Length: 91
View 1 (cartoon, rainbow, N blue to C red):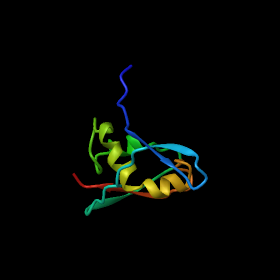
View 2 (view 1 turned 180 degrees about the horizontal axis):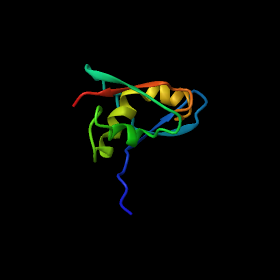
View 3 (view 1 turned 90 degrees about the vertical axis):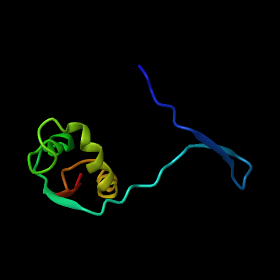
View 4 (view 1 turned 180 degrees about the vertical axis):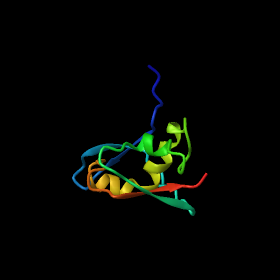
């Protein structure tokens, strides 16, 4: 299996302990989005393939929905149970 390498950087804290972290990137800001209702049991790749979002066969664009909603998704342990709407960035 091929995995993309994520660069690491190492720093030493005030106590002299060394810590390695993966390099991070900024969360993209999308200027135009559509609000999508979320129902019990929905999955983000299914939402991406809805006709009003990106259309059939567009599951590969689900990353845009993840990026646009990363904070509420993270705060809810990546569960859609308590999330009623998501933003779907326009293409």
